[in-house]
Length: 448
Image (cartoon, rainbow, N blue to C red):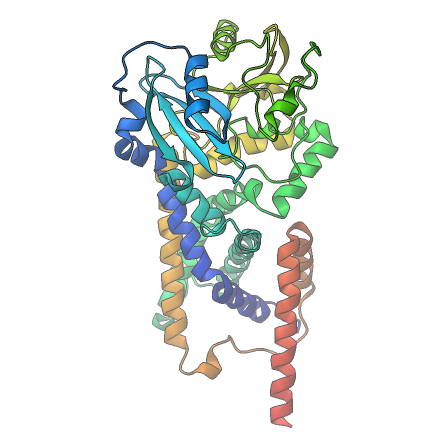
C-alpha cells in the first residue's frame, strides 16, 4: 500500500520544528503592526497634531529650504500632504541611509522630528520582515517560513480528514484534535494573509514584480526587480517603478551635477514650487492625503500619488482611490496619470491584498479579523506543542515513526507543485529528504 499519512505527518513535524520560533515572532510582530495607527496616534500626539512655537506663516518651499539648511547632508525624499487634523510630513535621508521625518503645522513651521528607523510602525515592520536586521538572509528565512506555513495548512487539513479527528472520541487524542480544529478554522484566512504578504518577500516577491514588468497586461506597470517596500516611498505599489514621463524643458542640462548623488532636486531655475504643484493637483481632483516626490534631475517630473499601502499613519486611502500623477516641473502640465482602474491583475490583487494583510482594508473589522486569526493560530501552535510533548517519551521518539513504504503519487505530486510555486520550499524539501536519507541509513546500519 502506498503511504500518504506518515510522510505528511513527518514533514508537518519538520515544518513545526524548523519554523515555529520564527513563526511566533512574525505572528506577534504582525499583531503589533495591526494597530500601529492607533498606537502612533497616542504616542506621537505632539508630532502628528502639535504646533510649533514659531507662529509666522511660511510656504512649503520655504519650509523645504529651511530643512535643507538645517539638516546638511540630507535630501528631500517626499512631502506628505495630510488631511486635517494631521500635520504635513517631510521625509529626508542622507547617503548613509539615515532617514528623518519632519512634521509641519498649519504655518508650515517645523513641529518635531523623528528618526524613521525607530518609529513604532517601522520597528514592527522591520521585525516582521527581517527581525530588525535588514539582512537578506533573514528575509529569505521569513519567506521560507511563509512557504512552510502554507504546507502546514495543506498537510494539516489532509491529516485531520484522514485520521477523522473531528469525530474521534479518544481522549488521548484530544490535544491533537484541538490543534487540528483550530488549524482548520484559520486555514483559509491564514492562507490569504500569508499569500498577501508575498509582495515583500525577497525571492518570490522579486519574481512576481518581474512577471508584471515582462507582461504589462498583468501588472500594467514596470515593477521593480526588488519587492515593494512601503517605507521607502509612498507611491502605490503597482506604479512604484513605472518609468516617469520626461519634462519637456532641457535648458537646465548639467545642473543636476551640482547636486551630486542627491535623490531629488528642489532648486532648479524656473522649477515650479511644491506649493504650486500641490495646488494644481488638488484643483485637478487629487484630494488629501497625498504625497509629492521631487524630480530626481533636471529632466525629471513631480510625482503626486495617493496610495493604499503607504505604511504611514493618516496617509492610506481605499485601493480604488489610488492614483499617480506626473507633472512637468517647469510648466506644471500634467504629463501622465495612472489610476487603479488601469492596473493589471497583479497590480489590482496586491493593491487590495497589502492593506488586507496590514489590517486596514475595511477598518476595525479587518483588524479584529486578523487579530482573531493570529490568536487562533498561536493557540494551534501551543496546543500542537503540548500534544507533541505528551507523545514524546524520550529523544528517540522525537520524530513521528517512519513507515517504510513507497510515497504515494499524491504526496509526490503535491510536493513537486508546491516546490515549483515556492522555490525556497522546494530547496528546503530536498534538504529534508537528505536528512531523512541519513537517518534511514544510520538506522539500517545500526540494525545490521
